[in-house]
Length: 298
Image 1 (cartoon, one colour):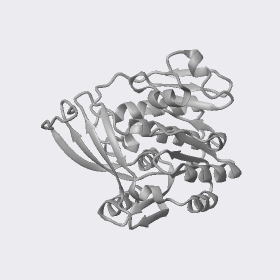
Image 2 (cartoon, rainbow, N blue to C red; image 1 turned 60 degrees about the horizontal axis):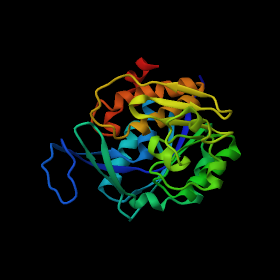
Image 3 (cartoon, rainbow, N blue to C red; image 1 turned 120 degrees about the vertical axis):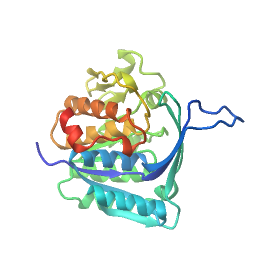
Image 4 (cartoon, helix red, strand yellow; image 1 turned 90 degrees about the vertical axis):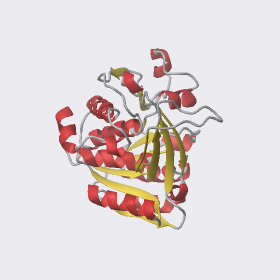
């Protein structure tokens, strides 16, 4: 397989996570079980798991000039993620407040902070400059205009573009036109399509002429080819502890797969396995398997 060179244009945050048996109702106060801080942000999560897979990863983003930003920068350095195109801002670093219940289900509020200050011209400069770049990944925790600029530059270079449309927001026709792969979960699919992904007919009508993957949580994922063929991959049965970051694990592994020469179905199969392993552990990046563990899944 060829060398996997990936650029992730996206968010980097610190996760502030509270674990409780039951999530409080409005106006209710409950005692929780555990509080943790950890590395997160959809972009950073996807970059980190791709690095764990062995990819050469370049992160394009903006961190606060604060303790949280310093911690993320140090983590990128430790993992060998190229941060040449990571800038710093006086605006506080982005954070995510996360509640996780006894079933491992989460509720998340993000405060983007410095992530919303990434500049389109800097993203273009990065995408035009990275040697051997194969795949460019983005999400919706940064401004859509930045993603559009990055993807447009990527297509001019012949790179594959992957959009994880999370958290959901309406997507411009211009962005969709330069997006090769879109990877929503069930909720985002329904927002984008208008119907839940409950039948083959609905899935086939999602994005005619373009490739898509819908992640289905414990049910795995389904690949929709540009000509409307469906390929389903089931997930192994596991004991879910925390689903935070599982979708990002799938996206990052899938990007690695394509960049390293795997076919989409094999890349999806590996993504489902890694994401399934991640939900058996607490946290986002802290739940991701090591390269040695991933090698046993390939």
